[in-house]
Amino acid sequence: MTWDNVIVDVVGLALIAFIVWFFWLVKTKGVKAGLTGGGSQEQVVLVKGGYTPDVIVVESGKPVRLNFVRQESASCTEMVLLPAFGKSARLPEGEIVPLEFLPGEPGEYEFACQMGMIRGKLVVE
Ligand SMILES: [Cu+2]
Image 1 (cartoon, rainbow, N blue to C red):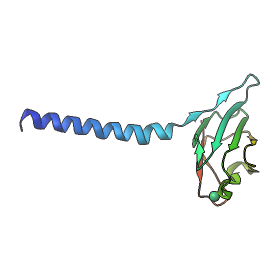
Image 2 (image 1 turned 135 degrees about the vertical axis):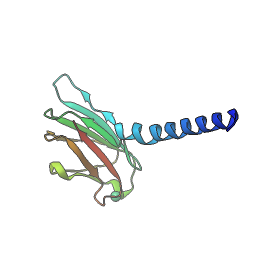
Image 3 (image 1 turned 90 degrees about the horizontal axis):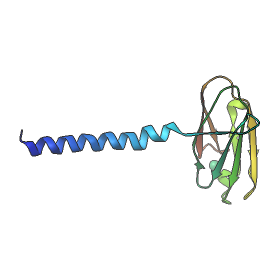
């Protein structure tokens, strides 16, 4: 093995590590909901061809309010469902629709459109 072979290998491995980190680790980390003065956790979720952010991290035991803002007219995202907390809401276009609940048991919970095609994840820590 010559030196340039070693360099090519090292660069290749570094690139793979970077890709894994960027697309996988960073993505699953999610966005931590902000804490309000009243002690509740709030996060705005943009609904447009998907949920942005699609991974939301909250703390257990503090009330959460997710403010969904739908900026599209596709009927697919008309509803949002959070089955683990028995919550669902209709999302009229352009309106801010809050979904409030109290997270208990830590874990990962899915929220999705009524057909389950568009999905997001709530991570309770
Ligand atoms: Cu849908």
